[in-house]
Length: 388
Image 1 (tube, rainbow, N blue to C red):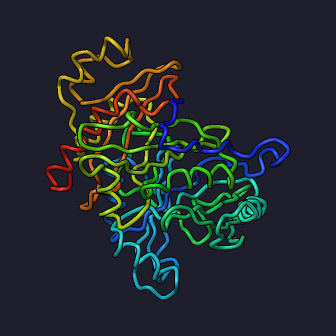
Image 2 (image 1 turned 120 degrees about the vertical axis):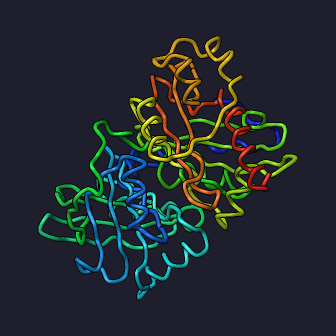
């Protein structure tokens, strides 16, 4: 972990030992990433064709949901839920409708699977979390799911989901659905690696402490000062994670610089804090990038000069340097191993949410060695949009 600068206060260590019971807030992993979108049917088609995901469940007017339509797509353990409003009739529908109006398509919920929703919710509220919905049960012929919800940064929430022996396609109220398109011969990714949140200047430590205190997450990585800076812009980032490292949440805030950072741009166009990007774990980034490019996904461009000296410091990788150069894939190495990564451009008209594809070979890092090249690439896109 890198050190802090003098003007960036240390984040207090999470409460441990006698002051907090061990595993007071255990998590089993990410349950789902829930998006509020303007047109869920079209979004489901996009993620099916461009991301190789498989539609597995649906909820809409045809099976009793008169207010919203939701499509559930999966790739390995990664699950996206795309929801749009048909006709708002409840506070929930009005919230989703307003969310899309204010923020555009975006993530409203980073749902977490927990072994005991009631215990997790009680612990979260006891540690100061804002409860949005107390524990409740949903049941159908496939079993029972226990759920609750707490607030995090912006209008994002964490729904806590206890599935136990539930055997339905997603949740009660959802029916199994046939794929929209034929699934690819080899899936593009198999899990969510991490989810990145952008918050306002001066609030990163506040939210890091929230995850330390409420969920018992520990500080995994820290990038401050010159770690993430270019000639024009800068940002700071700290990564919190559960004990198993299955759930990792980097939290970013802008830093004062000559021009707008990507975080400033996001906050302006999203209209506040929210989920900036989702990293998806793949075991064959070459196949993933080739397939997604062929399906129309646009990735950030990296100057050819980046690859001229890459082999000198990253060493041997599974993918030859010439192939990394051809596909504009980044590489980084740390004390634990190496990783390969690439970033899409924003996947909607607003310059907000985008995705990362990451292939890990031992490394637990986030591509620190690539930060300068990556953020210069983002700055070039910001400049094209007139937002640098």
